[in-house]
Image (cartoon, rainbow over all chains, first blue to last red; front, side, top):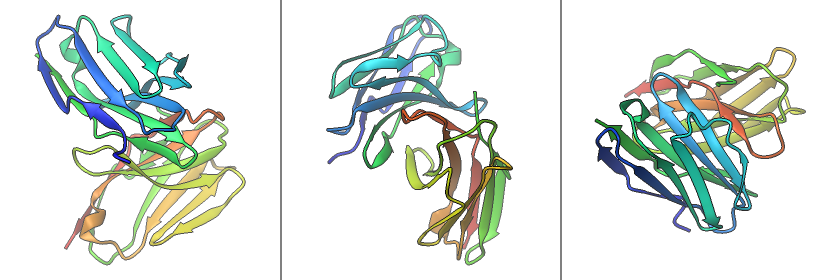
Length: 111
Length: 111
């Protein structure tokens, strides 16, 4: 298995633009998580899904952030409009019987 | 919000020495997990200890859990340069794989 796959690895955009981050979880995993990591705030859980259904989105910072999981093999995290304070590394992780596995992350820079 | 707090924030040791990292948390938990993160990569699961366990071993790793003090420690014995990474504790207070991560300890092992 290729593990959790995130794209893009790096994203540089200008303030006000829409940003879409993508994640392909490990096949068979029924939980999917989106985390954000910054030096100041550490690793924060934004939202997680169980069987494609959002369970807890209390970590989503603002209405500018939205996440979807249209099927078991794909999820997106969208920021619209983006702001410089959204600059961070965004991780997707999926969980199954053998635990939680992280993707390599998307480094987002909003100028 | 972060549940766990690791200390020290940073640790620098010589190859061959043991490294001990501590984690404190605030609420009751089902289990506590330790993860490693190499620079520029996602987190990798190291070990899980359940709330009814006091100690667990995995290779050169030893984890203890004291639920009365709400604290855990991770010991890496006979450290190697390849152990250089950030180490995070994460607590699971629910049965839904929802993990809350601490701020992490940066470990540097000098060869």
